[in-house]
Image (cartoon, rainbow, N blue to C red; front, side):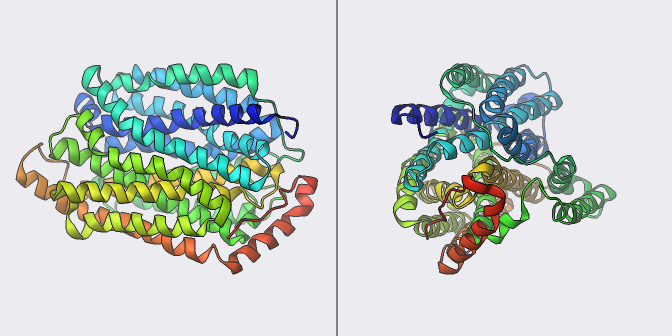
Length: 492
C-alpha cells in the first residue's frame, strides 16, 4: 500500500465510509419508521424488535467469517459482493408484503452488510499504516456514524411522512451503485500473506450462541421466562458457549484467536463496544416509540427532536479521533462513559421525558458520549494486532458493536413490553404517557449501567498495566504474523 498517493488513500477512505454510511443510515432511518411500520403491518413490539434484530443478529454472526474470508480470497472482492447484496436486499425490503417477508429480506441485507464494515476497516488499516494517520482516518470513520445519526431521522421522517415507510430503503440504491462503481475503479485488491483457514464449526457455534440468547430475550415476555421454549434457548446458549470455548482453544487457526483477548485493551474494547451500542440501540428504540406513540409526533418531528443527539455525535467523533491520535483512548472513553451514564440517569431517576428541556439535555449528553466512544473502540481493537489478521481483528470490534445493538433492542424492548403488559398505549393521553414512563424506567437504568461500564472498563483497560498486556500479546502473535506486524501497541 506504500505506493498509493495521499489523494488515492483519501479516496479509498471515502469509498469505505460510504459503505458504513448506508449500513448505519439504514438502522437510524428504520428506527424513525418503526411506528408507521407497526401500524401498517399490524405488528407487536416484539415484531418491531425482530425487524431490527434479525438484521443485527445475522450481521454479528457473519462479521468474523467475512473478515477472515476477505483476508483469504481478497478484500475488494468480498467488499464488492457485500455492496451488491446489501443494495439488492434493500430493494427487496421496500417490496416486502408482510412482516415475515420484511424480516427475511432484512436478513439478506445483513449478509451483504457483514461483508462491508469489517472489510472496509481492514482496507483502511492496510491503507493507513502510520498509527496517527490511522487514528485520524478512524476518526473520520466514526464521524460517518454521526452523519447517519443526524441525517437518518430527518431523511426517514421526511420519507415516511411524504411517501411511506417503504421509501426508506430506496435511499440505499443510489449510494450502493455509486460505491460499487468507485470500488471497482479505485480500491486495489489486497490479501493477507497468511490468512486463516475456514472454521465452519466455530461459525455455527457463534450463530447458535447469539441467536439463542437474542431469541430468548425477545420472546420471554410473551412465552414466559420458565417456558420450555425459553429454557431451550438458554440450554442452546450454554452449550454453544461451552463448545465454542473448548473447540476454538484447540484449533491451530480458530475463527478468532483466543490469544487476542490476553490484551486488556482489546478485551476492554470488546466490552465497551457491546455496552455502548446496547445503550445506543435501546436509547433509539425507546425514544422513537415515546415521541411518536406517546407524544403523538409525526415521523419528521420525531427526527427533529432527536437532532441534538445526532449533531453532537457528529461533532464529537472527529474530536475523539484526534484525541486518540495525540493522547490515547483513555480521555474520550472516560468522558463518553460519564456523559452516556448521566443521560440514562436523567431518564431513569428524573423522568426526563416529562420535561422538554431535560429531554434535550439527555439527548445532548448521549450524543456527546456516543460521538466520543466509537474511535477508541476501533483504534484499540486493531492497534498492536498483526496486519495479516486485520480483517479478523476489525471484525471482532464490529461483531461486538452489532451484538450490543441486538442485545440492546432485545433487552430494552422486552423490559418495555413486560412493563406495558402487552404494548404501547394510544398516542397523546396523559395516562398513556405516565404508563410509558413507568414501564421504561427499568430500561433506562439498564442504559445507565451500560454507560458506567464504558467508564469503568475504559479506565481499567487504558493504563500502564493494560499497555503491558497489549505488548505481550503482540509479541505472542509475532511468530504467526511474521513480517506483517503493525509494530505498534495502543497508546494509553
